[in-house]
Amino acid sequence: MAVRRNRDLRPAPLPGRHLDDGHGLWRYADRVAVRCHRCDTPGWVVGRSAAARFRCLSCSLALDGGSGNAGACTCGRCSAGDWVGPVRYGGHRACGHCGHKWVSAELYRARAAAPVRTLMGECGQCGRSSEVPVTLSRVRANEAIDPHLGLPLRLVEKTAAGVLWAYNEAHLQALHAFAVAPLRERAGVANASMFSRLPQWMKLARNRVLLQRAVERLQRRLLQG
Image (tube, rainbow, N blue to C red):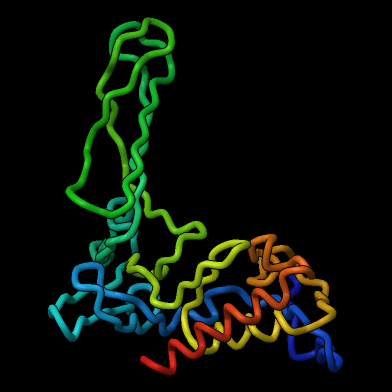
């Protein structure tokens, strides 16, 4: 039986200390500052998952979220939704010539375009190529894109140690609190929180000031619109 942790009972951080309470990045994903991938106009993706939407006030581009699994679901209500971010096509099959398993094929695209149904894969046994049916998967990883539609984020700052990005002001405030704290603690949470998944350069003590200043630059940029 799974035990549900009550985060309200966790100790509050002491002054000068940052406490990782275990919340994930999705806490900040209900309102994401982005740029239109067509005309580069700043805007917002509002809502979560299937309810997410973006409306460009310059070029009138309209994007709407979806379940993302329309191809696998048979309920008739799920839709793939719009996605303009990076995608990966991949699949495998037995060789069509010698029957050797498996012939694999994979293709990465930085931006979703016309759908791909098949790719050519070379058999490692006989060296001949076969047509391989492939499926599409959305690539989120640590890309500076919004998690719902794949639009480029507006709050992105390059530093000497790495790239910093954020969804909105609340996300920036959380990163700022992390950056300025001389001591950082975890309240027994598993390795699934936003802070535990930060890039290593952000966690290094020597980069505290660098991270703090980068966050503050993004905060000023957001205030300027």
